[in-house]
Image 1 (spheres, helix red, strand yellow):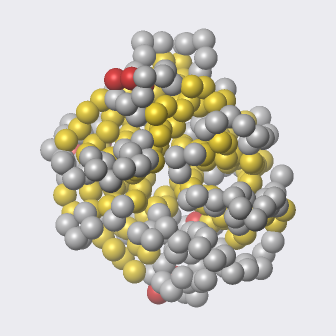
Image 2 (cartoon, one colour):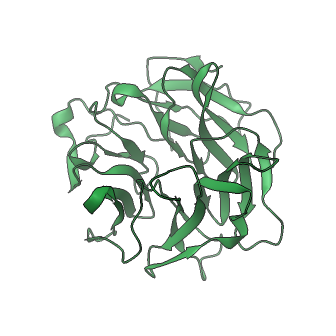
Length: 298
């Protein structure tokens, strides 16, 4: 279990948690009533917008502020996208929004992982992640390294790791059926439910070391995990946001410490997204649309 403090110290080059002095200071970036599942990275914002007949459409806000609905099939359940890049090298690197397409109105059954190229405007199924025995959900990607979940009737359900374009088969990291994932290319943060309540854990893709568990035994599963190089953040009930202090890297060993925002976001907050510089207040999505808290507290 993590130690907890209520006084937020300076987090140089750290993350993520927003706490402006008053909710009225928050800036509406894009109106999106009824939207769900915000993701942000690389200057892009992506969310699921309600469409006709109970369907959902992927919606994209480009770095220049243009909002579009890509010409791809709609969804029976709101897609939960994550945005990340395909490679370390700049040459040929693409920026993808990854998500699952599922059978009917389900968000869990009959799912395959898809990727939407945010610059090219094309969608493709990631065939190497698909299987007949499983439903693949909760994907995330960064620098070509992916996390996702296999659930269903196969012999080894759980949390998996895969290198995009690699020859090796996906590797199972845990038997946990994660709800959501976020990756920084070397680690994965994932939310889960258990007999003791909801929680969030951070695990290395190498499988080495003991998973970090900064939050657990929650009455509701934490939502919208965010992960930078050495920090994680997440959303709790009622718009409450928590984050870790630095938990790894040079200068350690580090003690796992959880800090709390000085104020809650609106109670209708659905999800969080990384800000462009990955070090200041996150974007968030509430009943009115996509917002960013201002000013940051750091």
